[in-house]
Image (cartoon, rainbow, N blue to C red; front, side, top):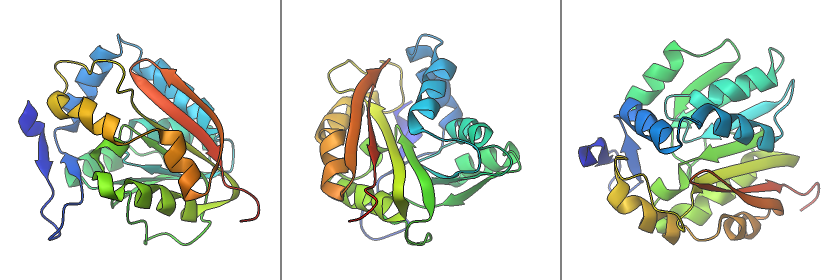
Length: 215
């Protein structure tokens, strides 16, 4: 199962990890959450503040599970963009995409495909620990750049204080990787966001933040 994680080779320097066996990853995560995956992701959607007509970016969207929930919250007048480095996951997500959701290839630390202040909401779930440690602040700064003034950030990742699911692909590296990410609220604050709340969900920790109206 640990072969589910492979290093990306598209660039000469490490860009993170790509989960191509995303369906196995999703299944094991669902089991680890005790069958509460849908409820947890609904809570993440609510915490993000996504509402009708909003433009949303989901960073590290994998197969698009959360993106589809965000698209339902944004409604037909809104739009959700999912971003992920896995071609296999994106192909799966596109086959199941609602009309107001699109998906494209990319990594959290390089959102140059998007202009400044493009999105009302930026989310990222179970992706930060896949970003190389030296690039994590860059990822938060990029998310800040593409968030509109007054827009929101919601990031959730594994809580390093809790044991990782034992059958999860990459479980051996998951806890140290999550721990090395540092407090999510500190990364958000360093990037320029105003942190509004932190908390925990089953297996996860999260930060909710807002981009100030004026820098």
